[in-house]
Length: 515
Image (cartoon, rainbow, N blue to C red):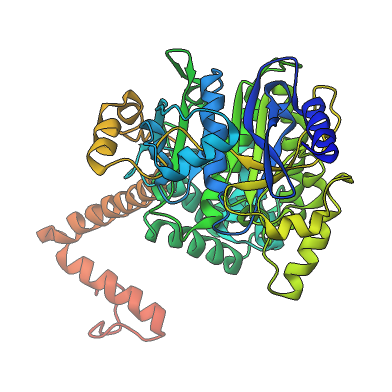
């Protein structure tokens, strides 16, 4: 071993050998050689300092997430992951060795030991896993505006609607409730009711919001709003001492990236608001992997980004770690990127001026290295290799290491359809969330209010009509009597004569009664 290799190995060991439990990521590489003794480990204690897994398409990001999830599960730490293509279900089954895996195991001097892990399957449509739901109220106006793609004015109107529902103790559970509120408060009695206290909602704005809601319903995704809403306690399960890996399969809603990314944020927000303070733990309570993170931040409002920043900054004190997965660090706003202390950067490809700019900015996020030219390393990494720097137990960034990552021990691909369906039908969580609950909420309250108003108006009209009918009936009785029939005729003639200014015919100059 050369002096440089020995120096490199010594520094990597000093940086990546924590005193407590850790995750083995792989071994450092220098000048094209894998130095197995230069082990790269990530302290479990620092996993709640959040992280970033980035790299171009096809560089191995998904397998890195799989590697992290496996070892977290082994350590008894539950994991939540977005399964974009449905191929992470292979975590449930032990992998099979092949020539490439054995070659990597030899380079790392770590035997390949196949293993499966406990998983739970979830879905936003309810078709590919246990139905994940959240109430409209749990989303709140900011996140819901993101899903509906509302502008600032429309978002403000949605906030007013939520405020009205809150002030009047109207649960807003599903999209049916929201549509009813929008319609009620934008016209008629409802519009008059809120005008002085909340302001006026224009029919045009209300119409736009309603159309956006209907579009979500037409895409078959209305079921993700409602009850029973997802119980976050179900994310903290363990089986035989292993943390359960919860997979949200979105392969059937891939064309709705804003929807599922915003749903993930709402779930993370609920965890943040409901979990107690935990302080510094030896390992996190849960690690939340946020795949396709660039979709979350794209075209986001300032209020939306501020909400994310607040959650990421404070949730670590609840014992929750969050890892974003995306193509380049520049996909993540600087205010949030600054809070991601653990970096696993796969290869970046430079084909355009924008790619070159992204590379330059990425290089600037890494500590200075005595062993690498960061820009050259980032563009020459192979599949399953990454440039890594994490936080040590004192919160100090470690030495930068180009790393050959270890292979996942589970199946690197989807489980068979038969096994998938069997696991899904046998899960108690599938049964728990299968049937939607439609309790009294804003829709029923407002519908009853409108119906009561109509009934009151109809009763008033009926009473008035009945009174008129009684008066008419009395006159008809008098007019219908034989002795008074002729008198009645004369009375009518006399009345019409006075109205028209003419004398009754055949009066003969006599009195009203011809007398």
